[in-house]
Image (cartoon, rainbow, N blue to C red):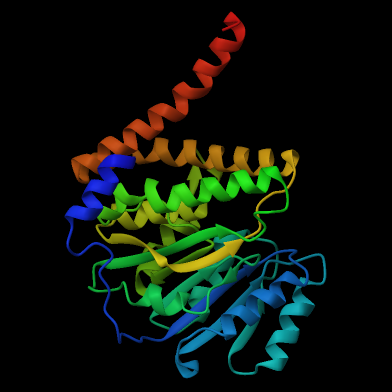
Length: 304
């Protein structure tokens, strides 16, 4: 992953190609649940984007927050009429359906998904939009960094993990325009593709059991499966808050691992149609995810 990705990045002349001057209408969708005053900071960072104000709107969809999040979002809406819109789900339906609700309400050509605890760089939207260089590019993800890296040793370690994850480990998938997981923290989509895939997203389940976690990985895989290209650029940046305690970190990682396992498993039936390098990469990561805990337990049991 390290060396093949770096080699392909140097080999491809059009790696991270962009089309400057392309300015479609953009709606930034922010799913919200119990973020408190943080949602206000997120909205303000989005309002400061280096993008034409008449082509950029912000839609906050509140999933029945039980704190004062809705009030903070409404404050931003009142202070910036016409640019910020706040809608509320009639009941708690989860992040995926909340975003789908906002997408149906929007009329923009490009939908940018931003998590409610994220602060976005001023040029992020422009950099994302510039990567839609052809109609078959359906989604473009940005680079996610840690906003609290110096809080303690745990957040410093996560800052290193995020750095290597984006700067090195995604290069192989980026070289073949098939990035298999674009983070919900900051990703731009063509709206018509989201509407096209809405039935699949609405009815996501495993053996009849609804699945509400791992929406970003699932959505990215469905876009690739439909024949579209998915890209990632390091020039569009955002910062998220990393867990600062072991309990929070393990809760996050267990949620992500559960999501990874389910989605990797369901992708085995169609990933073989992709470029052989991407398919091999996908299968090897899934095998590693299964064998790693098995080997770890075996080592503990044997005393090694």
